[in-house]
Length: 95
Figure 1: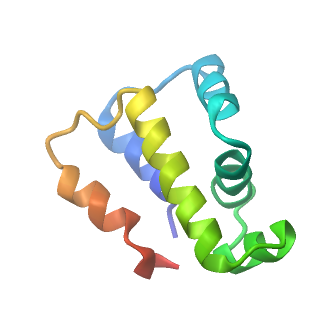
Figure 2: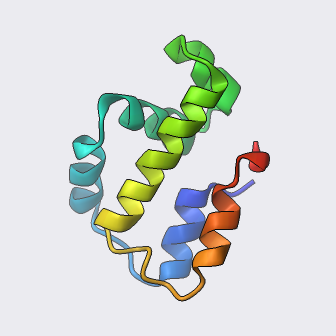
């Protein structure tokens, strides 16, 4: 299953540099950064990330949603016309 982070980067047609991406990830809150790194980068499931962080699965989902939305906004990747597809991909039913 392809992750929303990868789908959004491919669909947007513009990719941030690794330096830009790292700066924006570093600017996330500790909770958001941990969720993004564990799920998007390391590929852990929400449940596995929750166990690793010692928090409920729904908390991981919330941190991940806020982190992803912040990255999309900061990296100007949310300017696509097809925002409904992004919202659908962000829905919690995917994991």
